[in-house]
Each structure stands twice: as C-alpha cells, then as structure tokens.
Length: 438
Image (tube, helix red, strand yellow):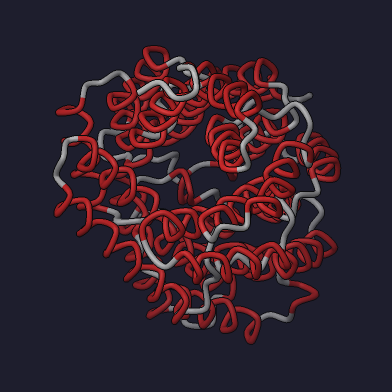
C-alpha cells in the first residue's frame, strides 16, 4: 500500500487545507475534486457561499457548478436536509450542459456521489466508472467507486478498487476507505494500521479530525471505549465543531455509563444535524433513563425525516429500517428492507431485513438473513448483528445459540446500543436460569 505517501494536492478542503480563514477566498474551481466530507459544517457552508458568489459572477464555470453540486450533497448528508439533493442535481446538470460528459469527470463524479446519497448504488457505480474513463485519477470517482461496491456488498471488488485508488491517488479519502474495506473483511488490526499512517500524513485540522474520528469509531466498534474517547478528543481539539466526533464521544460516554455527558453531547449533535441514527441514539438514552415521552419525540422525528427523504428521492437506508422496525411501523419496515435488499446485498441490508422479519414474526426467514449478514463478508464482526441473530434464535427456541450470540455481542462491544445491550444482558440472565425458575 502507498499509505505512507501522504496527501495529494487536491485532497485539501476547498483548496485551503481546512483553513477557515482562507476557504471562502479559495478559487472555487479548486474544489472540483476535494473530499468535502471532511469539512466541518461551518467550513462547508462558507465554501458553498463562496461557490455561489463565484457562479453568480461566472455562471459558465462548469467546474464550479460540479463542485457546488458535490457540496450540496454533503450538506444534505450531514445536516439532515434532503431538500439539498434536488439542488445538487440541478447544479450537476448545469455543469454537464456547459461541458459535455466526455470531458467532465467532475460532474460525473458528483453524480456518483448524489446517486450514492440517494442509495442508488448501481447508478453511483456507473457514474463513477464513466468519470474514471474521462479521468482515471479522479479522487472523488475513485473513492465513490469503492463506496458503491461496498454498499452493493461486492467486497472483493471493493478491495481491488481500494488498491487501485491507493496506487493512483494515495491520500486520506482513499486511506479511510481502504481501512473500512479491511475492517469489513475482518482485518481490524490492518484497518487501524492504515488509519494511523493516514493520521501521520494529516496536516490540516480537517484531516486530523476526519481520520481521528475514523480511529475512534473503529475502537468503539471493538469495545475499546476509553481509546475511542481519546481519538474523539484529538478530533475535537483539531476541529471543535466536527459533529461526527461529537457524536462518537457521546456514544462512547453512553457505553461507559456516563449518561449525563452522553445526553449532553447527543442533544447538541441532533440540534445541529438531526439524522436518523443520531436521533435514535439520543432516544435510546432517554429510554434507559425512563424518559419515554422524550424518547418518543425523537423517534417521531426519525419518521418525519424518512418521509422527507423519500419525497426528495432518497431510499430508506438499513439504519432507518431498523429504527422503524423497533419503534414505528414494523410492516412498513419490512417492505422497505425487502426493497433495499433487492437493490443492494450488503451485510447491513441483510441484517436490517433479518430484524424486520423478526419483528413481523417471520423468524425462520429472519434467521436465514441473519446468517447471511455474517456470511457475506466472513471475518467481519458486528455486535448489533450478533445481538439480532441471538434474539432471533431465542424466538426460535434455540437457547444455546442465543446464549452464544448474545454473549459474543456483549464481549465484542458492550455498548453497541444502550437499549440493545441492556436487553441482551437481561435475556442472557434469563437463559442462565433453570427452566421454570422465576
């Protein structure tokens, strides 16, 4: 791997290395191929403002329109405002009107990003491939191709795509994706090594925050909560407004039983960016604290967000289907999960479908998909997947299998979910008692 080679010139945020004092002044054309997902909300908003001003003065800048489209997609993804997707589509089409597709890799890569945000990963892959035919070294297209293959469940191809991307455009966007593919293939130590080397190459506050947050999430997923907190602290020291790091810190505090700190962090997170997973995480903390009314309000917001996302062309993701199965319309969650499985056969989609089937009383079929979630990428371990499979086995009367899965879930990550971990512990306790004992 070329991880030690460091960042490429265009991997800085809006051409300014994440320097918020200069980002608004950077020539917008430099933003055509930058990884906008690394920007804090304020930096992203300033970059969008700068692009809008530039395009008002220079409306025939095809590269600027492509950059604006990609930035709108990221703003929608991070802020929970799917109304930005139609704006992104319009900006990207404007770019392609001004410069044809066979010369406009930036707009094609932007279309890949937009399709992925709307969970049309087949289209995302097609757009990324078209962009790479125009420019084989497009960082955004190389990264988007890895993302699409991962979400489609084509993990072997995703690894090969990550290797190609690493050879062509080694830099933080590629390194973080490479690490995630390694984790999905069961190589968590390898993923951590890649991320640590990526952190060594980070020279801007945005880069440090982005990679440190990825390291924190990896540690959290494997139950290393204090280590996760240290990584999130590094991220927030570099970029205090970086919401993914604040979210990670809140989840780690929750896993350690530091509920007041966790609630404080997650309330701030959802105030800024009310995305479904974040709303549900806060709701679970309220549930554990016995505040059912407040929890219900958060779940209602998830349902409202899902309706808005669908109205703006985004399909339901596995995370939303899981929340709906537990706290909303279980039948509707099953319909959504089946539709998503027809579009992409990833480990997360299989798990969501398994859980939705279980919540609808279809446990034999549910177990089939729970096993698929483990088998599609052998070696990958996920505490939520183990919890779901354990609960399905318990419903089928397989107490031994349920015990093994639930214990494995808690051993891997005892804080994977405030309510889920509590339920797993409760069920394990009941299964350890002799039958007939109270």
